[in-house]
Length: 223
Image (cartoon, rainbow, N blue to C red; front, side, top):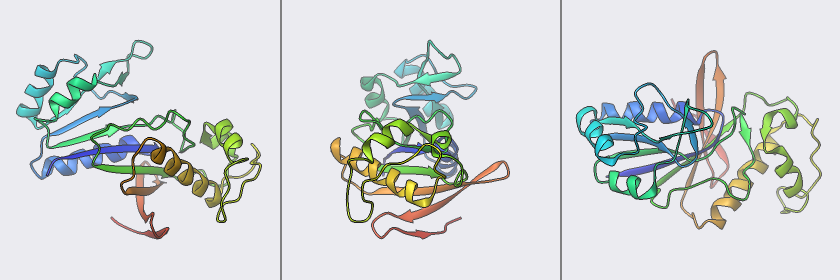
């Protein structure tokens, strides 16, 4: 079954995408890696924007990372034209899309225009980095100013509205507020399918992921 997997959040999105790509390739799938925003381009990335060139690589190598080179940062790529991506869906078994940007922060609070979810997405992963818990919110959370404004007005029984200070230490409460904000954003753009939430943690140079059941809000370890 064809899968179109969008990965959002902060704290290991690219690592997760590459691990998923390797896993699906081992199973014999043709894997396309791309973005709807911006993403670092690995060596050998197809930056031509040409569907025929990308299709050839998928058929030959069963793998291709593809996008359009960013003019402001040649090391990064940006989204393919939507018509090109839709054409390539016929040749890839698995499409992995980095659909959010976080400027190397471990946590991110989404703005009104984020994340950028491809309309054909079948699976959605939200990554939330936990290794900066205890550090000041202002330094850890990308778009913290957005969080300050919205959490003054967003209110429910579990997480009542309150003022969040820049020097506050990041706690699990802040992460729950970020998760809630993503749910709101996704609902606003019409995405009502299941969100697979992954808490990430640095282990030396490695990143480990811990899956959470977002419907029951309990955590389940997986290897």
